Length: 357
Figure 1 (cartoon, rainbow, N blue to C red):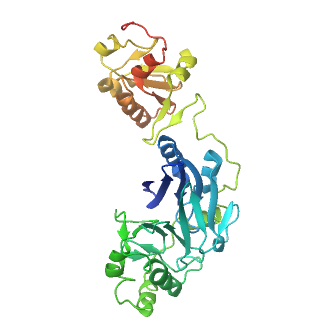
Figure 2 (cartoon, rainbow, N blue to C red):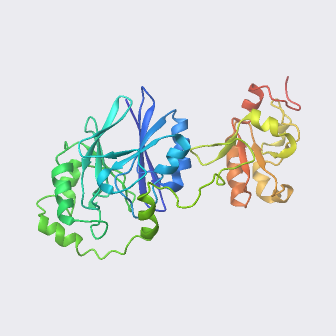
């Protein structure tokens, strides 16, 4: 059975796709974005998936791929089309090859036109295909740079994508209107550029007169993506907090487990955001924790030192996660949530003051 998630990067309107094999827990990540690697790795961890491959549909011009950073963080391998001309990949793909993850696999279909190295990844049962920038929802990729070729794109779509079953769901690399998925049948019938009785001459005339500006990140993204996303300069780990062993959640929150917080002692500020009755109630509270109920947090920021790490606490970790968001919005940088709250703190026999023994 397949595990599937569609993720979105708002800055570049890029979709990233996570596909996992439920039996083996192996997964692939299609078109990762550099700035979203932390999010993607967190999701894979929470779903108990090991990303074995990152796959790019082409050398992107509007964002930097997260392939290199994902390999560095998670040990995944990098694959993309040999025709893309990139270096630094673990595997260069040819038309007709398969990329496996557990018992599942993706077929590589060469679909040039947007760039010379575009591919479409087709799931083994042909129920899903990932078309990159070749075929978009009721549209298509542009063909005016990076070896773009409108005749090649027309043939790619009509012969390599529209030849899939009518029910096959199609997932593009981008959408700028909030649309998420389409199908072969829909695009055959309704795509204004490539569907119906559109001829190759019609299509060439259409895309040759779009008059679009070049992507803003073109000069940065293309060279970086020809290196599979590896930065030119030394890339450290300063972007991750150094004051504790934290876990980044898919919800975008740094969390600290109870034992790690207990070891930090007075090196951090613990802010308990429950109400007074809870703070003094059956669960007790962490020694030294300062009581600032969540509804008072914004008004009492002056009580929290901005130059020391902060850990927020509540009963289960839900309210304190919101406290992290509030503190970050107010400029606090080193902030984490106590994973599982006081319930987990007590279940792991960490010391408490007050409460029921």
